[in-house]
Amino acid sequence: MTGRPPHTAAPGESPAEPAAATGADSRVAALSLAALLVIGALMGSANLLVDGVLRDGPAPWAYGTTMLALLLLGADLASRRRIGRLQTVALVLLGDLTYLVVVLCIADPLRYATPLMLLFPSLAAAWFLDLRPLCVHLFVTTAVCVAALWPSYDSTLGLLVQAGVSACTLNAAAVGVFVLRRRVQRLLAATQALSRRDPLTGLHNRRYLDEQAPRLWRQARREGTSVSALVLDLDHFKQLNDEFGHAVGDSVLGAVAGALSATVRPADLLARTGGEELVVLGAVGDVAEARRLAERLRTAVSAVRSPDGHAVTASVGVAVARPADGEDPVARLWRLVDRADIAMYEAKRGGRDRVAEAVSDLPRALGVRVQESART
Image (cartoon, rainbow, N blue to C red; front, side, top):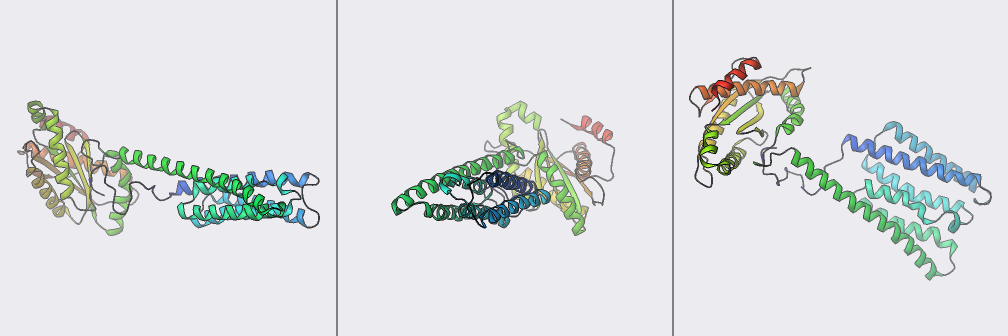
């Protein structure tokens, strides 16, 4: 994940598709389905209290056992608070088949067990299933409507018309909710992507670095490597803006962002943290490797020409740390960036367009004083 343009998806990620379900999504799905199971079971259990609704014989026992099973299943889901995709598909299909059991137990299905009861699994399918399982559900819904209404109609034409109307109504509702859900997911994904991007350069921003810090720290501990922070600040950028205008400055920033995106390693994190300052984070074996990367980035910036022909150089500060167990990755990351920031201002004091290494974990206050004396 590097500083790609804002409309380019990460490898293996479609910009129009929602991301894979997270643990929070699984909990929401489990609790929602549990609520539907419990509500459906409680509403259906009311038929046990009304005379003449259920058929005579074993029907009341079969019906009551089915409602009890739904209650227990809902309680189990609510307690576990997680559910997989295959389990979700199975529950939706179970809801379809449960309607058949209800129809077989009801004395007058047209009166007490209309296909409207299938609205529960239809809405669950529309909101929680992907396209292929949803298509399976739509087919099953149609078949269940035909099977459930079959005993109530002597005319084949009447059966097909009524079953068709019921199935089409349910399937249209499911498809409509599914389309709405996908649209909402795409909008959320686009909003989240924009919240992690700098709108001017298309690079990642500080929020994205905060989100990636734990992963970067875990990876470095697992592989036994160090984490490097490179802070780049464009030299005399304020003068460029004052002399030629902010439009030229923005054009230069865009050209620099493109050059750095093409230069950093695929696993590095490139972000604009503010103004003309950019940060590159990545795993390195030692300080020498981090310095070589910093030199490549400095050279790439010095070779950049904006569309108007303007050039710029960069001062680069380098800091390296080896992650330790028990530390806060985000706080440690920004302390590391602070060290690189201080080193960057040392590079400016040394003449600009050069790389400087952080030799120790200097206090933040000292870094502020160096910044105030070196910024131009």
